[in-house]
Length: 91
Image (cartoon, rainbow, N blue to C red; front, side, top):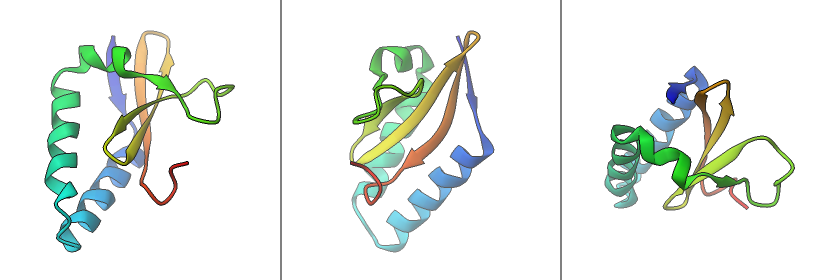
């Protein structure tokens, strides 16, 4: 399975990390490590996908990393990383 990352998702990850670093939040390094680990072993992503909480009717799925939610969509043998929901938007 191919993994593709949208420009929006790249931008959102950069903003989230910049914000965590700016606030000197210890979650920054944990989140970065978890994200790196997830994408270094992309074969594990499908096993970690869950329906989006509270929106199971959507074709999207999510992976929860700490207090962040990564939004994915599977289409034609490709898993698209679409975006990131930071804690202020989750739930």
